[in-house]
Image (cartoon, rainbow, N blue to C red; front, side, top):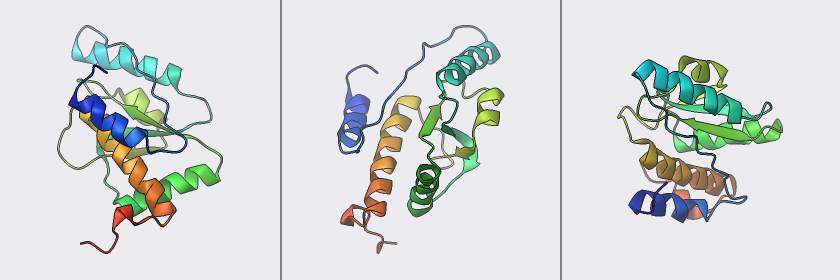
Length: 143
């Protein structure tokens, strides 16, 4: 990710996470939309650890609230599985990626650029960590 406000947003929240997240970027593919999805999907799946709890960020996925997201992460951790989040590029995720994922979630019904999604996801990971530690960051009392 190039330096800029999107990278700064991600860095701001990633620096608060313990342990800090690891990011694996794959090269942007070229070709038709279907070919781009296929190539990028194959690269995502190749980078995914075999025992990972794969979570695809997909517009058609469930839209959990922050507490449900924290619970999802807790269940994965209790099962000894590291959550790996799969974020598609401009053409989205290949069906092979969503088929491999144990969970599909959306950050709302709107479409977001993948660089913004990375920052938004980092914030939600930090929020989930705060929820699990009973830290006041989340402010559960707010509607």
